[in-house]
Length: 286
Image (cartoon, rainbow, N blue to C red; front, side, top):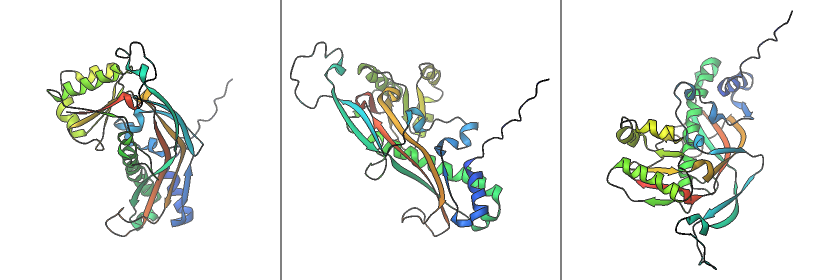
């Protein structure tokens, strides 16, 4: 007679783990995770909305620097004739090698003091408020991050091409997809402001279904300016180097985080975005 091994308990959410630490250590609680907690926001399970990070391929890295190759349009005069360059522009690309440091991205919430006495409510607060704030901060970093001591985002990477508007928003979007293919790639991701998504794409005679059938994923984000859309080959054109580690702890926020004083909790992840093919990303006006 065979026996079944007992089922393993479901892993605790980041909020539950932190709430347990608070119960034991109070406001000195500090929890480190061997995962990237922006992937654990519970809302993704009920409403599968694509985050910016989900468009990129992800590589776990335990090193402080991400080393990567990249290609650009020519910046110097060619030393020899290249065959069929008008047909295959990538034949004239220049090859480079560089590195990007893995940088922190942080999200903050202020904690009502009486929430410290309710572990279950505190866990939900962390899972549904801190994690979503951290997800928003990551969307911002990966899209328009300025670099320096923080992540450099896609739109701050040199070499991304801007395209003028066509006769209508859908034509502008599809023209950008075609431009990716003219560079030798395949568009598989779109970043678009939610206002433009609902105004121009939703309900357009099966357009969203057709894009999905081609493997093109759409991320709705406020980090893209209204009236523009970002189209690219996210799989071949970029890599998100992810430390695979996160932290939640009480901390003193720097100026400009909150409009008033209060007990603050910080969530933090570490990553770097390497754009291998800026030639394969386009920002199109709608």
